[in-house]
Image (cartoon, rainbow, N blue to C red; front, top):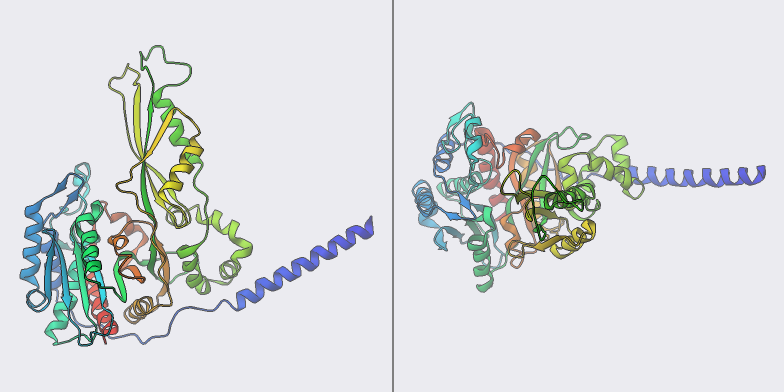
Length: 490
């Protein structure tokens, strides 16, 4: 028996040595994917750019499911035309469905595939209950303490104006691109983009236009993005999650008096249990696709213990996923998320309702579909009294994953590292929805990146209270688009 134990010990020790050897070899061979570029000198940008952004913020171009304020969007387009006179007069301009815009800057070499820069003109409304918590009025466009304040300074008038500022400046310098450049500004991104981005994409398809690459809003430059990396990380979205909302309801034959609740459960109780079950039994986490790609770029830049883990995901994936699940941001990167957002039921405090309903929103990880989400939810709840249906009108599959070894990604990476020294660039999965999802038929190379440096704590300002952008950060966005155009169109 002792000989057997000694033999097993030796086999186990030998296996551990082999595994350790693989870990060491993989870690030593885990090389950086950052490119070496020379930092460029920052161009001088007039402070009036902040005033022009503030003027756009003052126009409440809000979109909601109920509709839009036509007067506000008309005013915003007129404002843009008046502030960017060279863009308005020298670029070809087309208006789609009254309020969306396409611009075309024709290049010298028609044989080069064009590029497309996206942004959107609309903003989300401000919750009236939070208006008193804003340091500046949400539609003031105030410039104070080095920031431009108001709705749209992060999402997404800041992109519209910085792109226009960059082109207006290049036109003033008599710059002429070799490659044709298109701009597309939708007016309803916040409510799905059907009248804006979807219609624009359809027009491009009808005209047979395809793009070398497309760049839209999405991930950002984030300070302290990962605990093991001190440098800011420029996250370039190479894919985005899908979207589906499920309607969930319980309809009993009778409600009744609250003094004699049924022993088999009330409608509210049954629905609450179903929602609680879904929150407890989340979709499985996995490290794949764009999320895995991100760590292939950031892992080599980490300190040695973390570097060894990411170099050997085949061994440490389970431990790594458990760690990522502890943080709300990284948790959203590794699974389809479950978010109950609406609930309705009851008419009086002493009356048991017979019908209650709710809505649960899911952001779908690559590999899943709206239909697979529906199947998972039904199986997880496993209660015939709970009726689950899909909102097909807004359902959207996850996007395709764009390559990192393509011209578009490489140019965006190069431009970011030229302008922002001492950063790390990495691909990422965008957990929110963008207008990009409508352009999959006109390019295989679609990227989502806003060249704006933020603290992690600033992310809550997007769609939230005290939305703002630093004047210097905004100027850097303008510099980025200027350099991106120069790099892409020569």
